[in-house]
Every structure is written in structure tokens, then in C-alpha cells.
Amino acid sequence: MEPKPVPEILAGLYRSSLEAPEAFQAEYEASSNRVLSILQSFELQEFELQLDDANALHYAAGCGCLDLCEALLRQHPQLNFQEDQYGHTPLLWAVRHGMAGAMQLLLRHGALAWHSDQRGLTALHWCCALDLPRLCRLLLAVPLYVETMIDQRCRRGWTPLHSGAYSGAASCCEQLVAANAQLALRTPDEWTALHLAALKGHAEVLNILAPHCSTEVMLALDSKGFSALDLAKDSGHAAAVEVLRQPEETHRHLVRAWYKCLSRGPEVDFHDLMEAALLIKAPIMEKVSKDALELCCHVVDLGFRIAGYVVEVKDCRGPSGAAPARVYYARSSEQRKVDDVEFLVPRLRSTGQAIWRRGGRYQFRLRGCCDRSSAPDPYSLRQVISEWSEATSLTGQRPRLRRFKSAPSL
Image (cartoon, rainbow, N blue to C red; front, side, top):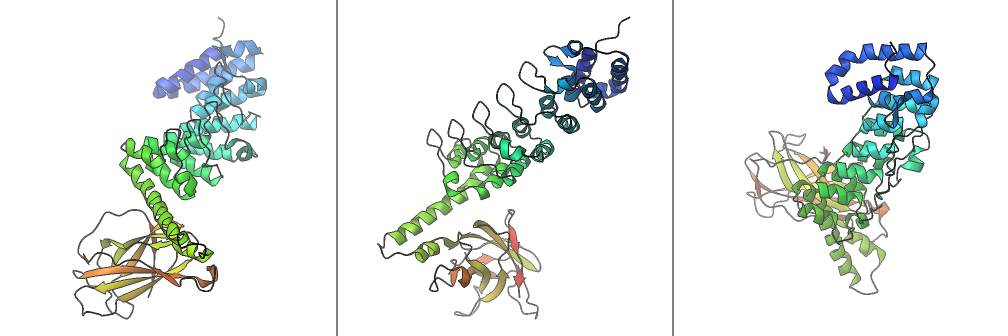
């Protein structure tokens, strides 16, 4: 009795891995030993390893059978470069099914990491579209891959970052941004990656992309005149709208401030424009605990002028004209040009003196102290000051967002 053809056995294993993983585990050892025995006993020709426009290595790679992949590569290394009817090599089969071990093995045996299928999709496109961060990281570690493939467009005109943003692959997008993927590139519909993430409501992706986007990218319009914020609003994605609204509001503030400077005529100079790029909004109280309270402030500092902060605490029930208590903070190295900065205000100083009392009613203000060495001229502002916050009773708590914390210097 003739043995069952190798590709048929592997095709059966592959189908089991997709349709019945438990059955695949149960039959794997017997089937793989059977294939290895056939490969050792017979010198199979290349045509004997073909089935349904794919070869035995496609099926083995697609279900992650590493020992079988290795045996096939030793006897028939050319299988590594053959394509199925869609232009998929065994490497793309491994990637599309998340088989990291098989992908690495095929790459070690010379698989072309930059190969694209009939739709122009590379392995990196597939990783991002299917949200496979481990495989994405492995591909980006391939020598010269980042330089040649990170912004490669498929036939649809999408880069891997476009694919990742649309599918919500936050970790993949983070890796691409760290590898200097171009955020300004657009699809034929004039969509940036920001547009695509907003369209699908992927707030986590937007949180990764937005800090690295220029104002031009943040406000870019697609072929129908919609910004990323417009798409998020029209699609009803509240979380995405919240991420994108803040930069647009900041932009409007800067436009108004710069227009005010420029409207003064030809006497305006550079430091006036730099001062227009400094803004601190009134603090918002977020949480009160036994020994500390948390404030959050929206800070715009495009020139990285602010070196430290002073939180002022005013007792609304205290004597009129009394000086507010002050707590000093250094600027965090992680703070971005436009950021929500959180301040932890202790209840007591190290001397035991109270800064605030639980149950009291207080207002808060934030001063940003500018570094004079970074100023455009010696007459630039020494500080930028927010408005006083609304009077707040220190008894409740508001929902918290993730922000940088600044520790006080008492």
C-alpha cells in the first residue's frame, strides 16, 4: 500500500489546526512522525510536494510544525520561495497564522522578508492588520528591514502603520512609531493613520500616535474635507473624540494668541510669538485622600520654557487678602509640549504645618517658572500663571485619567 502523499497529510494537519485545535494536538505527533518517516525513506520530487497551488512547506508553516518545516527545507530549500495562487510564500502563511517560530525558521533559511503578495501586502502589513506585536517586533529586528519596508505601500496605497491604525493594533503602531514610521503619509483617500484610527474609534492607538503628530498632521483633512476629529465625531466614538479634541482646542488657542501678536503690526518680534505658545489652564481637582490631593493642569509649552511649577492653595474661608500656601515642583523629563500634568499636593508640610484641611473649601492656581537660559531674549516672561480654579470642597473625588505625576519639593 502506497503511503499517503506528504502534502495531503500536512494539509489535513493545517485544517485541523484551524478548525479543531484539540484534534490537531492529538494527531500531531503521529502525523509528523509519519511525514518524517516518508521524507527519510523516499527521495520525493518537488512536484510530489505540491497540492492545491500550495506546497507542503506552506501547510507546515501555517500550522507551526517546526520539525517538519526544517526537514522540508533541508531536502527542498526552493520550497521557501514558492508562492500560492495569492502570491503568499510559506513565510506569509506563517505570519498570517501568528506562527513566530516558523517565521524565524524560514527567515534563517533565506525567506524574503520584503516579499509582497498580489495585493502588495508584506509580512509587516499582515502583522499590523492582524495585531501580531511579537511578529512585528521580530520583523523590525531583521537587518535593513526598517529602512526599506517600514513605509512600504500596498496596492491599495496603505503603509503598515495605516493597517495597524485601522485594525486597532496599538502595540504594533507603537513599535512602528518608535522605528520612525512616517505619520504624515496618506492613503489615496487622503487619510493619515490618525484618520483611520479615529474612523474605527481606536482611542488607544490615537493616544500613541497623537503625541508624535505635528499640528499639520493633527489637523489634516481627507479628500472630503474631514479631519480625524470630524470622523470620530461622525462615527460616534466618544473616547476617540476626547483624545483628539484637546490638540484641536490647543491649536485654536495658539492661532488666536499668535493672531493677536501679529495684528500689532511690524513691531512684533520672535519672543512675542514664543510667549503666545505658553499656556496653563486652571487646575482641576481630581482626588482627595487622607494625606494628599491630586490636581491636574493642561499645559502648553511649545518651547520647553517651563523649568518648574508652583501650586498655590487659597483657603476660601480664610481672612481676605491672606497669602496662599505654595508648593514647589520640578518639571518632569517626560512632560510633552502639550500635556495634562498631575500634581500631588500633600496635606502637611514637613514641619507639620497644614497646607489644606479635609472638608475645607479651596481654590488652586498654577505658576510655571520659565528657564531664562532657554528664553529668546533677556526680557522674556519669567513665569506663566493660570486662572484660579473654581472653589472646591475637599470631600469628593472625580474620575481619574492617566497623566504624569509631579512630586512636590517642600
